[in-house]
Amino acid sequence: MKRDYQSQYYTVFTGASSSSTSAAGGSGVSDVRADVAGKSKMWVEGKQPEAGYDELLAGVGYEVKSSDMFDVAQKIEHLEGVLGNDDGLSQIASDSVHYNPSDLSSWLESMISELNPIVQQPVVIDDSFVNAADDLQAIAGNAIYPPEAKKQKTSPPSTAASSSTNPNAIVLVDSQENGIRLVHTLMACAEAVQKDEIQLAETLVKQAGILAASQAGAMRKVAAYFAEALARRIYRLYPSSQRDSPAFQDLLQMHFYETCPYLKFAHFTANQAILEAFSGKNKVHVIDFSMKQGMQWPALMQALALRPGGPPTFRLTGIGPPSGDNTDHLQEVGWKLAQLANTIHVEFEYRGYIAESLVDLEPAVLDLRDDEVVAVNSVFEMHQLLARPGAVEKVLSAVKDMKPEILTVVEQEANHNGPVFLERFTESLHYYSTLFDSLESSGGGGDGAVEGGGILPASAQDKIMSEVYLGKQICNVVACEGPDRVERHQTLTQWKTRFESGGFEAVHLGSNAYKQASMLLALFAGGDGYRVEENNGCLMLGWHTRPLITTSAWKIR
Image 1: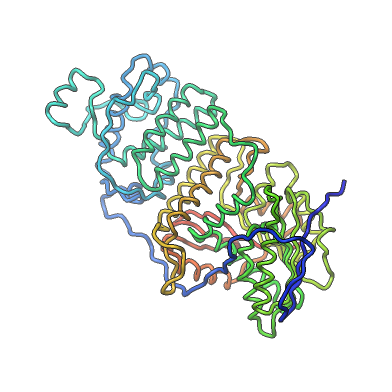
Image 2: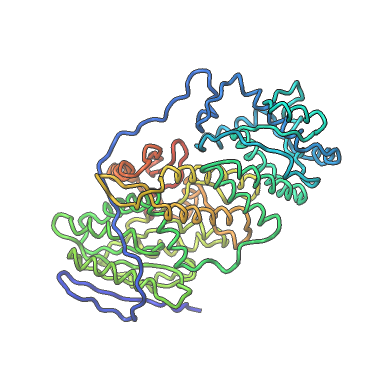
């Protein structure tokens, strides 16, 4: 049965003072802002660890000599013995899977090196939170660190004396040791979940929460979200099947846009590829699969307005889900863009189509015209199709029917769609730890405005809402399964296979796109940590050495 589409239609001609529409107006929305570009600057490589210091912990701000690493291991083993003294728990401990020191070190190198927690005073841990249900022995103890003479920090004489009769004596633990233990606990909990060892998983997720509270900065926040997601999976408290309203999702994404450069990078690079495809064309048409608040298009419209020889006729088709609150957000976005087009003298036409999913979109309803050059744009949309078998192939087939000059795609550079839960958990823990670490660099005292050629640090509200935005993704990746798990990110290599199978071939993004991205990052607060790299004609934006999002362009083969 053919689907009915709601649509809005706007036309603005050069010099016109008003616009016409076939739909009624709605409530106002936030202003659409153009992307900001600025001067470029040289990248500064990170500080190299001094000789004799462990490079792994130096990467997260801890200056620990390699010769002291064994002492750290002994302290962790001692803590496990102090807090897990119940003899009745040793049988469960023997059933757990432990990691040997070399495996743990290599894993921590990729995990903790991306975090930069604030160094804090040693944390005092006593037995007040330990009860008979806490299976701390299940976290690798003697199986990972052989029992040898234990070294520990001494406490005041009165406390030390009492330790001879109290097996749970107070012990001082550095935050860096808690960080290592926290990562290990989260991994052990995920492994228990995969094995359906629910009682052990319950114990471990509680301990993860306790250990997370002893941390600071990015590690504390990301660990709390992962612990919550694990708890939801363990206790089957899945996120509500009723998804957040599109308006709320757009709100979170707008705060994320203001906080860090990932969405700005996506818009800049995709727009540059579209501009090059539209070069010399008189009538152009963009079909946007991710319209939302239309933040990508003011910059493109301004670039078209400045084109030598005058701007082309620009038609924009925006696709989006129903608003859920009886407002027509696509129409509101269209009106704002029409007003901008009128101001900068670009002949502009807009239509918005409401569709529950991109799978429901039919090219026949898009009013495709033979005299127009078409570009299709998708930002963080394609991965959600993977929750429905065959959906990506159907959408790519529909795109081919649109006969675009170029298809621009921006996706997260991660593999969160594997069949094995533990592997998916490990990859997402790496990925989101890096994202949260980059958010920490954005600061919290500015308003995102441009001042003195640069962008001030994000406001505290932008930063908090951005963390919520990412936290919801973590919860979906870890706690959900089946069609409810929509955050199914895949890598560029995986997408390349899908697009090539669908009849597309890659279009190399030119040097201009690279320059645009570099200019953007040079403006951004904390920009020294961001890195742009080219990968087979695609552009990746990452934090330090970890790629996080990728912009690619495709054409019909």
